[in-house]
Image 1 (cartoon, helix red, strand yellow):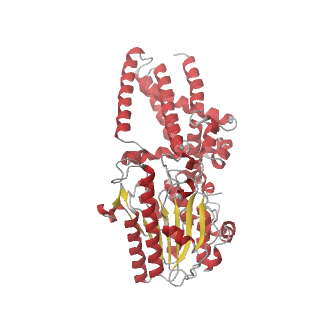
Image 2 (cartoon, rainbow, N blue to C red):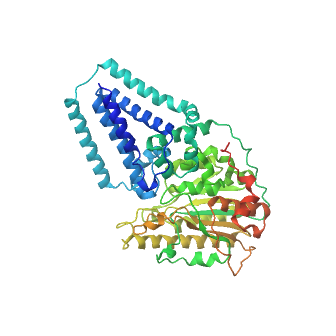
Image 3 (tube, rainbow, N blue to C red):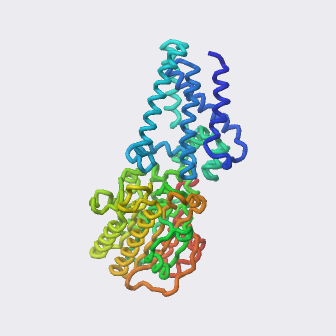
Length: 518
């Protein structure tokens, strides 16, 4: 075995590693620590393949192929979502297996992947004949054991590694992933991101616990409706019928565009920011998958704070509760009840998912039950009907994707009208928040990747609520600012709590401090 094999491998890997994002996303020159960490990752992969094969050249090629697979996945993800691979994406393997359709892996794609795997196995088998073993079994087992030991030690040593790589923390924490991956390289960003995430998990919490909301008793319900892929695309020339949204905008305490942190996927990012009021950028490495470690945000959850104040709390999501690990995260965030897919009937579906009209009827029943029990209700609903992919076979007699999307948004609008009517009828005063989690992956509308903002509406409902005839001017806010507006209304009980987003955020800043920042 000559030294030239690992040297050539390292040089090739360095170039390959930086293809994980398009060239236009490239950032500043990488710190030395990033180059060293990337080289360490490549050498570890080589050590692993060397321990598995006892063939240096095969191990070098297998290392580059492995890195190439990750780079390809990152490029494909970027093509769809405008975000490269990040460390938390590696936890989606079981979700991919359960719901391949949500990751655009259909039968044809699965067959192609299977065929490629068989060809790869054939190449590996042939290579074992071409390149003889370079050392015996005991040495091979020693190399494999060393590689596995390094992998086993990494989680425990992540805090120390993060301190050694302190120069890599600012890019990871302060820049979008397409920038830090382009600057640091994919290998370094995956490992350094994981190390920083692990270190944050062990760090002492610097902020005091979030103070309970001093609920004034004015409102009897707060309902948050997060609508899958909802965006008023009439601004992009898509014909939509949204009469309830148009009618209720006139009554709104606040309405306009919502600046969300994702495009086409990662519903739970908008969900968590709306629920906790912790801005996306202040969630540190937890921001990419906040349900990996929901306890970090639990004390900021509006559901938990209202539950402490005696409110009934319910979370409705008509889909697999294991998706994004919601089955574990939602109870930690203060919800006493999780109403999932099993609460609905096959007839409730519209296309592949439970329809918004059926979801609206279930929400109305929850509002009625809380009113009959004399309990204040906090309910958050995460819809599914409009989830992609769109295309032939999704809806009867509607094959064109934009027409399918318009049909789903009409149902979302009907759900909005149904829930607003239930709150108007069954409560004296209530707050209703309606918003889209992210813009849709809609064929022919790639420009939505650049204009990611969705739409929101904050409405005071109930028979005693004011019904203004002239709406407020549209305002642009983030989910955290909507959360601040709701908290301000709950504390002050005033309808003038819907001023500027910055003012509402300042008024309740102490309530929504992140407990995960040092």
